[in-house]
Length: 266
Image 1 (cartoon, rainbow, N blue to C red):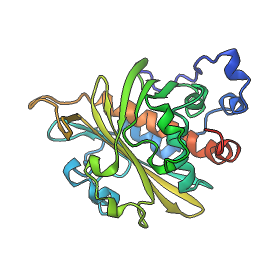
Image 2: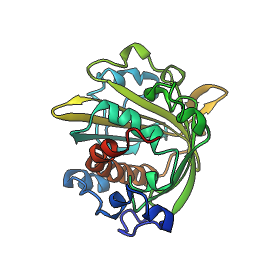
Image 3: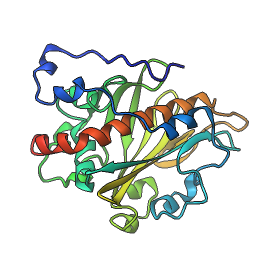
């Protein structure tokens, strides 16, 4: 598994002429050393069970893993991460997730210039509709993605959900420990349930990620689909953790400036 190659993806002549190409040209943000050290240390403590995921939203999951990865007793994998993002606001993140899925592929590339190729929404008209509240622009939208999480470029379909359709109690959203969120089911080589939530912290936000690997949407019900007796190889959550700490360290560095210059440009 090759996690950090340092080689950027290709860009077109047209992409180089876009005003936000300058973010692609910059060096990737440095990953905190304490997170890099965790790459060789799978966590023995598991993340909050998927069935109790509302504990994550309400910040009542402190007895579970907050930063790390591993494989649980039932064979499913998990990834947890927290990223402090100075000078980032909740509004910026509500905007970022739909914005990078429409327009030029460069929008996705600037997030992680070494691993992101494209992310394309299947309902661009909905995403760009000014009548749709920005924090709802991912609801029911699929993102078709090409990215590298350690084993070369791979296709992924991220099916974003309205929180209640993911099984969340929407009364928790908009509270002190969950200003907003996005949630999705990843349908690819290894199905997974994913949530990113964020809340105000110091002079920015705390951005919290959770992945439950081996879960899928089966006729509207999100549940474990990993066969009994099968275990997710630890390399799978390790690669996803490495990718997560890399891409969100970089997003924290560029988002305030990207938002300031492009917030009115869907």
